[in-house]
Image (cartoon, rainbow, N blue to C red; front, top):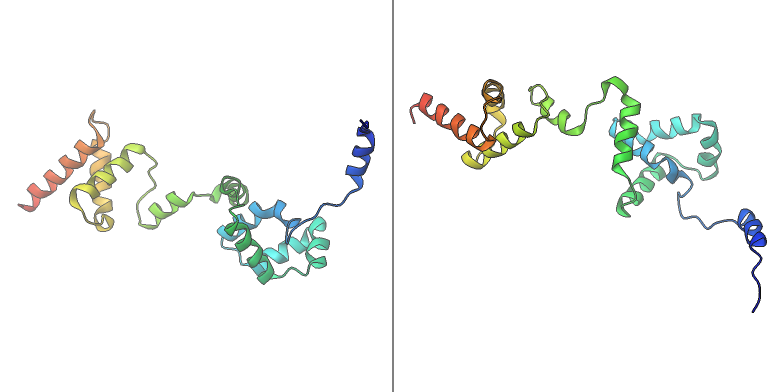
Amino acid sequence: MTSIDYEQIRKFGKNRTTATGYGAKLYRYCSLIVALRLCDWRYRDIVEYLLSVNELNSLITAHNIDNQKLCKLVSLWKSKNLIDYERVEEERKLILGDEYVSDTDKKNSSKGVSIVTDRKWNEFLKSIYKLTGKSIGDELAELKTYYQHHKNADVSAEFLAEQCIAERNSRLGA
């Protein structure tokens, strides 16, 4: 039986080169690149920024990475499910600072309603949708006002939704 020299293995391990796939060296910055895209940066702007970073300049120029190649890399990472979206959100928070708003909050605020991150509010809206079977879009401001007045009541969100619909129907004479 031959003895294995672990010291020699460590030395060899330090000197060996690892086989890397297309864009593997740039993958370390994957969450930053995707976060910049989510901040409405164009791939052209991202490449320009990466070229301004000293440690990445040589990597970008050596592999001739332009906006189209960067787009293909991100698509490749997405298709292989290699993007950690939790890290992407952390990067977005760092990039945007005080201007950071999560995607769900952004969707709610785009409808002209102040952002409410409340589980009971979400359950209330789901119940309204289930009971009426139609989109809530036009009635959102009215529903929010009703919810704000009655949210502290010791009732479930479903019951609150039923009450809201009953009041609205009585007002409309239905």
